[in-house]
Image (cartoon, rainbow, N blue to C red; front, side):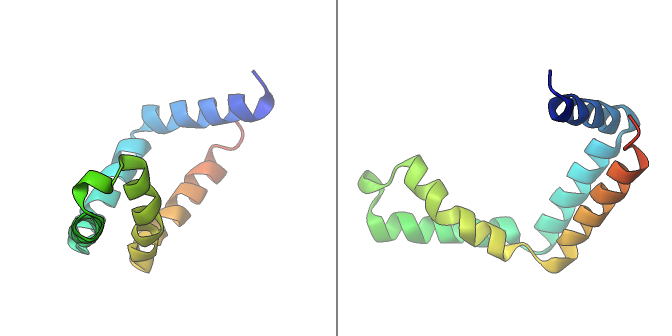
Length: 95
């Protein structure tokens, strides 16, 4: 296992052990629900399917079309999670 893979595995394990991973996942879910991200993305998917007709849409096509929109819809308030992740990584960088 190379050094980067080892670091990733160690940090992942530490985040699970400390409960930080679950905490971050729950915080992300709550914030995305609060800002209606899921509903907006679902509506966009419905529009695309209606536009292209369901027979002509593959899952890969749908993912390719909605991924940029999904990223763009993530509000800045949610991006605070990135800072929390950076803080966790800094605290556990000596693994």
